[in-house]
Image (cartoon, rainbow, N blue to C red; front, side, top):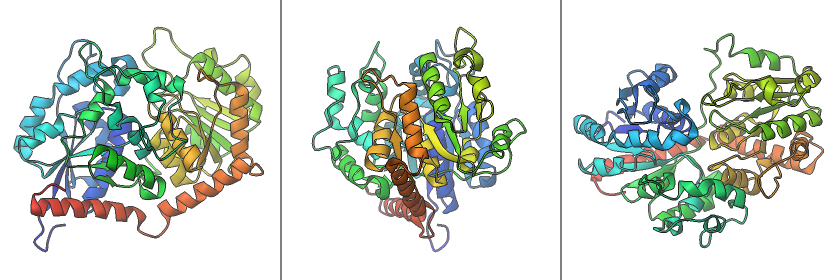
Length: 471
């Protein structure tokens, strides 16, 4: 980028205050820095402290900048991310984020980057950037299928959105698989409708689009070409895929405690273990835990289950108190239930792991595909249902667990889905294994696949910087 008379492009990255958003912004930042761009990564002090070790090898290429989060009534002291609060307090965190608009403007006036790359929650970042003539880029970390279904202009209404609205695909939608089921729509409806004078999550998404010069999205043509094209037509903005941005596998820096799961996996046969995890912010009810436990037991397969509890409950949670009576003793020779933080990337990369039973979070899907692990999909909330239909229905990279109409599932639903994927004499297992291998070859093959997407983005940034015209 530098040399040959080229101006070094300066990009400011500004993600929403959630781990699932911060990590994709980090991954894109690293790739842009590796290509010679100057990157400023903006977040709150506690988040920056967590990020710093992840970027230790990028010192001098990525500047970490802090904006202290203002105190807001109802927000606990020290809470600076969704991991620090219960789900029902997320709106208060967004109120605190909105209070950063003036400090953000002052920061932009001082730094004057060439571009601002922002997340959906701080839709106002584009308006602030425009005051300085700085182009703003909306970074969509979700799938194109999910966004084209949920952020289609037909859903941006002044009146109250209903379940019936959300279970119907937008006009000319390019899939019969990707659709919200009624029980999922009931969960997501509040995210569309403003309440108590607070702007809703989806309304923030709609408001993020008009002010951007173009959008970039964590996806690729090989997975979502028809959805990418549909999304671009629907929102009237260029949609530039940057690839799924799978993280690098770090082999070191794990503590003795963090390595416990890996040592347990060392004792298991190759490709035999079902890894079960629902991410850091998705928590199962006692009934769901019971059905999942009985289903895993019924498979007869080894399993490593990372079972996390919310840190904000009135009652103290314990593994033994939530699992079926006798479950741990009956499965102790082939199963491990682990309630601490676990290194998911290293677990999925372990040769003993053959199946990943996941909540269908896009990051988890991308990691599994990169590491060649077959997927069983059990979406729980938000974007996960649409992801599961994309990954299972469209791409055949996994198999979704069957559900009852109310969204509940039984031990037999779990057992059936896991065994169909794990057993390679089943048609579903053969298909998933084959499709995972095909997609992994695309991602990891020696064809400059990811470089192509990053280079296309940089070329677009360079053209815009030279002409100072809308891309």
